[in-house]
Image 1 (spheres, rainbow, N blue to C red):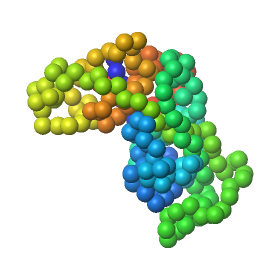
Image 2: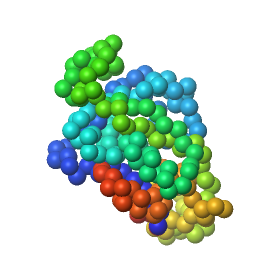
Image 3: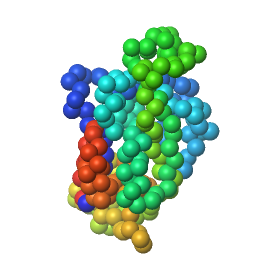
Amino acid sequence: MIHGLTADAAHIQEEDVFDAVLIEFDGFEGATFFQPGVDYHERCGAPQFIEFIGDLEHAAWLDHIFTAPMGLLLISKRMVRVLESVKPFHYRLIPATIYSDKIKHLVVDRLTRRRTWYEVQDPALRNDDFVILQLMEEIDCLDRDRTLVNGVPFQRADVSYLGMEEAQHLELRVPDGGFPPVFSVPELTFYCFTEEAKQACDKAGLKGLWWRPQR
């Protein structure tokens, strides 16, 4: 089984509420950190540390954070270690900090919505235990003949990319040596996680993960 992954937001009871909101920077709209191997610091001017405002009580027990205005793959360092324990894979970690929403007025400029100069030293007002996971390579493994979209093979369907659960049948060719625990397929708009990766995360008791079976 191959899985997609999104942040489980079941603990959020209100609309338009998120665990963490990105502190915007010039070019943030293009900084998805999704395309393997792309240097988003160079391409989009992303800062070396990506900063958020959020609910630190939630962040204290979650391993995957529900972010806005973009759904970034913001996961705990603990989750990275769990994935590595399944099988080594090539990735880049972008450091992240979540500041308490109690000090939003100090770290976010009200007019520009950009980061202010204010430095937060108090560990009770920040969480540095999360990173953005970016893969460094793609695996060209989609079987375009056997993957079905709207009843026809992908290669004849009028689509270029597939989101989660959009394929009626998703067929991937297993590479020599098998799949890494998390991998990227050029035609898919999400990272894929193996069944072994899911089981390892479940066994470790990771929280905030919503697994979406793809095949």
